[in-house]
Every structure is written in structure tokens, then in C-alpha cells.
Image (cartoon, rainbow, N blue to C red; front, side, top):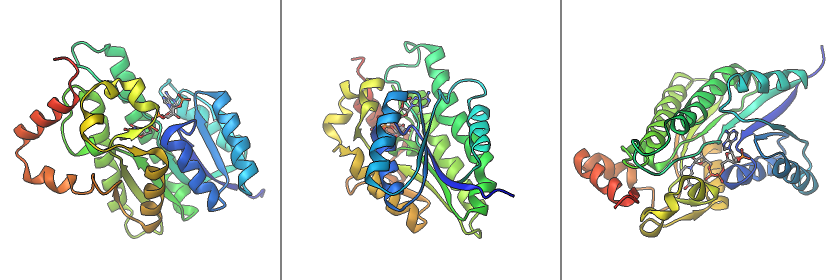
Length: 262
Ligand SMILES: NC(=O)c1ccc[n+]([C@@H]2O[C@H](COP(=O)([O-])OP(=O)(O)OC[C@H]3O[C@@H](n4cnc5c(N)ncnc54)[C@H](OP(=O)(O)O)[C@@H]3O)[C@@H](O)[C@H]2O)c1
């Protein structure tokens, strides 16, 4: 029987937080499989990582929101004799605006990527990461803890990620694997531009972090076996404050911070 090659599979690795997570895993000597839609960016990143660290980096260009995308990725994994040790579900995007005004197809596409692909890959590779004593890191958000008016569908997808990941972690608590939901606050990446949230008050009033800082904290928390990793000192109190605040008030505050439709 040919030996399987253990890999860390990172989605959304062509930039932002995913790129810096790739450096973190590579620095630990983990071989990588990087997935995103931008082939040129993935090629440049894989060459950079292979030159800097003693690891092998494979890339697979894929729109994870497309039908059967996870089947295609799985075929690539199997055809290459890979076995997933760490799965990092990081690919995701948001949209700022009222649900009535945003394009319905784009909002549903967000669910396909942020929810469906993440759940599919988690369920698909749970047995492999368990066999390989690795784990699953799912990137949620600080918005996972509350409703997000003017980022309504995005907030709901991230609430799913947190709930799903916590449940998965608890179901596997006695196994030798790590399962973490990462909850970054506003982070300077391509996310703000694609979602248009950079036009709202959120990025002015809430301190932003760099993708590098977020990835470092995420990786350390994951390695420690932390189930929920809220990144950054200023974001840390949020889950506790949310529990103490009436939901009607939370909705108002979130709406004030995220609306650009005044
Ligand atoms: N930035 C923030 O303020 C913030 C806060 C909380 C949580 N997050 C979460 O952090 C994660 C990473 O986001 P980021 O801030 O690093 O944003 P980013 O810079 O826009 O990176 C997103 C990554 O996802 C990939 N991606 C997007 N759509 C894809 C698709 N359909 N199929 C495959 N890959 C796709 C992008 O690559 P391609 O374009 O090449 O496909 C890119 O590599 C997301 O899940 C996001 O929701 C971000």
C-alpha cells in the first residue's frame, strides 16, 4: 500500500487571513494544499512558502461555492494520495446592505460558500483528521454572537459556523483532535472592499487588526485546543457583553455600526 501524504488543506488561502494561516502551518513543517479561485495568487504564494519553509505546497484553483466543488476537491486529494491532517475552512465573504436591496443570488451564493462548503468539507474530512491526529479550524466572526442588520445573511452564516463548530468540538471532545471556531473582529483584508463594510462606521469605531495578527492568534488558540478563539484584546469581552445586553439593544447597535443606508 502506498503511503498517504499528510496535508493541511486551507481554503481561501490566496490572500488575507488565509494567506497568513498558510505561513503559520508551514512554519510548523506542515505540507499544504491551498485552495481559492485566483490561480496566479496561489502560484506566487506556493513558490514563496516553498522557498521560505521546508514544506511542499500544492494548489487547487476552485470556486468552492459552485455545485460539486467539494467533490472535485476531494477527487484531487485522493488522486494525489493526500490525507487531510488539518482542515482550515477560511474561505468566505460578506455583503453589506439591506437584504431587500442586495442581489438574492449573491446572498444565496454566500450561504453556498460560508455554510455549505464549510460543512461539507468538515463532515467529509472528520474521519481523516481524526486518524491523523490533526483537526479542523473554521473561521467564524465576532458577528457570530449576534444578529447583523445590514449584513444579515453574512451574520447568519457566521452564527452557523460558530454553532456547528462548537457542537462538532463537543461531539469529539474525547478524541485526540483540535476543533476551533475562530472569531476575528474587523481585519484589514480584501473582505472590507468586497463586502463594502469598509464604507460603514464599523471599521472606524471598532479597532481593526492585521491578517497576520489574526492568523497568529488563531493558530496559537487552535494548537492549544481552544474551541472558541476570539482574536484581539478589544474583541475578547464581546461574547460576555453580548450576554448581558438585551437583544433589542444589540440589534440597534449592530444596525448603527453596519448600515450605510442612512
Ligand atoms: N476581514 C474581516 O474583517 C473578517 C472579520 C471576521 C471574519 N472574517 C472571515 O475571515 C475569512 C477570511 O476572510 P479575509 O478577511 O481574509 O478576506 P479576503 O482577503 O477577502 O480573503 C478571502 C479568501 O477567500 C477566497 N474566496 C472567496 N470566495 C471564494 C470562493 N467562492 N471559492 C474559493 N475561495 C474563495 C478568496 O480567494 P479568491 O478570491 O482567490 O477566490 C480569499 O483567498 C472569511 O471567512 C471571513 O468571513 C473576516
